Length: 273
Image (cartoon, rainbow, N blue to C red; front, side):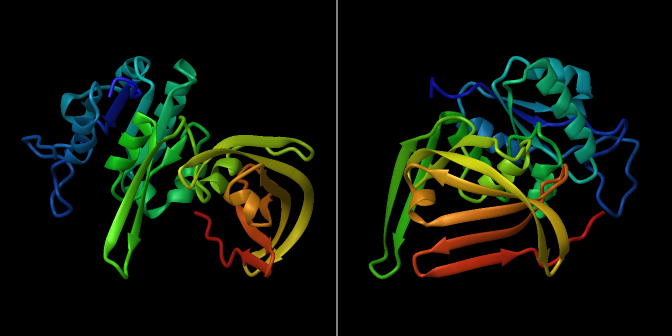
C-alpha cells in the first residue's frame, strides 16, 4: 500500500556473545552460535510492502547502528524481552532524540505479561501490543482499523474497514496514554480515539487533586475527566479517572456515572519491584 508508513521491524541487539539459540538447559554461550530466525517479525514484514526486518543479534548490529538506521523510518516495531527491556528503552530514547516524530511500538514477551507497566516505563513508547501483533501493527502502518461483528445465533459475521490517523488510542489504552503525559490542574490533554469505526477527539480535563482510599491503600491523586463532542465517551455519561500524583500516574480509581447508576473501579493491590 503506497500510503503506508515506512516501517522498520527490529529484533534488537542483544548482549555481546549471547547465544539466542541456546535453550534454558544449555549455557548462554556455545562454541557455535545459533539464533532463532525472527519469524514473529517476518510475518508482518511480509504483509507490509516496503518495510524492513532488521535482525540485530546474529549480524552483531550495534545499538548505534540501529539508531542511525531508524532515522530513515516513520514507524518502528521493536520485539522486546524482559532481560533486554531496559536496554531497549534506552535505545528508544536515543531514536526519539534523533527523530522525535518516529512512532515506536513495543511487542513481545515483556509487554505480553506486563502491558501497562511496559507502556508507562517510558514516554518514548507510543503503544504496546499484547499477543498476536502482526495484523495490529500492519493496520496501524496502513492507517486503517477493522471491526468484526459476529452473530452467534445466525452464525454470520460482518467485517468493516475504515481509515484511522496515526497514533490513535482506543478506550482502554487512552487511560494509559493520558498517564504518560504531564498533568497540571486546569490544563487539558487532547488526543484522537478510535470509536466504533470513527475517530473522535477526546479532551482529558485535569480537574483537581484529591486523596483517594482504595483496597490497595490511600493515595494522593489527580482527578481527570475525559470528554468528547461525539462517540462513546459522550454517550456514556460522566467518567472520571484518578491517577497517582507522582511521575508514575498510576490509575487507582475509575468512576462512570451513567443514566441508570454509578460504577466505581478501585485498585485492589499494587506490587512494586
